[in-house]
Amino acid sequence: MIYCKLSEANMFVTRQIPAEHKDLIHDISYAFHGRRMATCSSDQTVKVWDLGEDEEWHCTASWKTHSGSVWRVTWAHPEFGQVLATCSFDRTAAVWEEVIGDFSREGNLSNWAKKSILVDSRTSVTDVKFAPKHLGLQLATCSADGIVRIYEAPDVMNLSQWSLQHEIPCKICCSCLSWNFSR
Image (cartoon, rainbow, N blue to C red; front, side, top):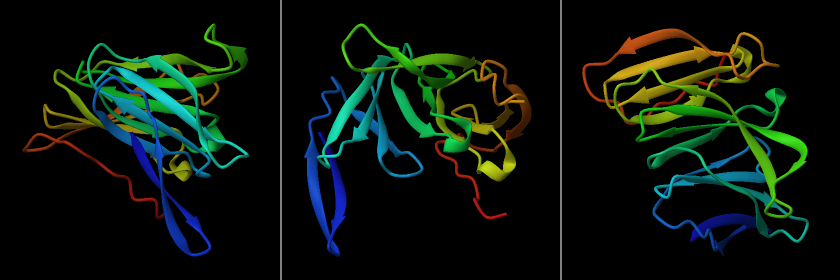
């Protein structure tokens, strides 16, 4: 179950959403405008949810993403399209893009295509975050091997190409990261 708070007339109302993941949910991430969210789980899946006109959350995509627990999911700025990144216990991070106008065989669910897989870590990739849009299309990962890696997509129209820009060793294992959104 997912619980979310919605502001209604200066009051917070909690709603329960039947997420239907088959295992523990590790992360929930809202898209820039707050009308989409993504969840990820130990069941190796990601689900995308859209807030309908009825103000209810509807699952519009669900797919297996990794061969291990999916720890984190994050949205890119909408200037770069509908793009997600995930990271996993399987030592990888992946970049996903929504394929517009193409529907899966499961009915009205949207289709997300894997555009790239980042395989530089020797251990579990524990967090993944897109950079603020003023830095371009960059993605940071951190992992249990104590290294923060920063990747860049040199061509925002081709998400299959990412180049490793920086490897920042830390003295301890990394479990989370964040970008400063201030210029």
